[in-house]
Amino acid sequence: MSDKFLLGVSPLHPCSYLPDQQERLLFSLPEQPLSAEVYQWLTDHNFRRSGEQLYRPYCLQCQACQAVRLDVSTLQLSRSQRRLQQQAHQLNWHWRWQQQPLQQNYFPLYQAYISKRHADGVMYPPEPEHLQQLLSCSWLQVSTLEQYVDDQLVGVLVLDHLPQGLSAVYSFYQPDHKLALGILAVLAGTELCTQQQLPYFYLGYLVSQSEKMRYKSQFRPQQRLILDQWQSFC
Image (cartoon, rainbow, N blue to C red; front, side, top):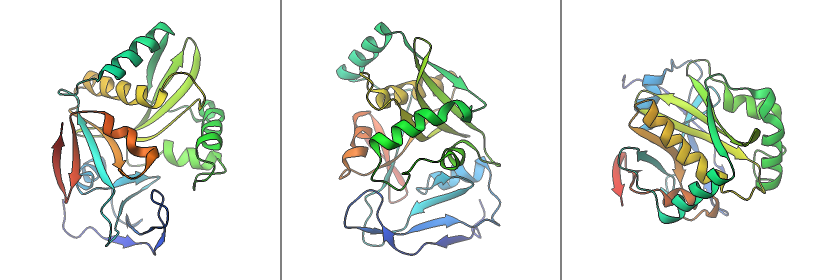
């Protein structure tokens, strides 16, 4: 990886995760060449993808955003996760991997999810263009993991493909479903990694103070990126 990779810095703006906090971002400039290999290197420095660009928090007074990844060979399900799987299979829940995402089928579900769960966030009101940014990238393979109960689509997990694993970009699902579809999406993603013989499943940022993101701490053992070093948490 070249040490001359150029990045831009955003102005300060309200934090997406913590109220009463300001954040700023480092982001890849449009003229910088990107690839899955570059993305993998930057993933180990806390970067994520948004559309065609990569970004990471760059807050001088706060280091709350810690990337999380799971080593799928060592993941141990908790008792509640095993019960959830049993309940899901009793309802004929299953998942499918779509190598070519089907945006036209996903927007009603995306719209319902954003409107119910994130009406106070930056993604509201939901727009087809927002969904398209999640699902497409000219320099990277993007796929989806679809969740079904019987033949009904109830959830979609958008995945980026990296040399060392799959990265969860965004998950949306029926907001009032009786199953914990967000947890099931992660469990299905680890199964897909195993099938594809990929060692890691990347969960994105964990912000311990954010109620909406705290569920990521349930998956153990896990590794968290702290000061550019992956550290294990059992």
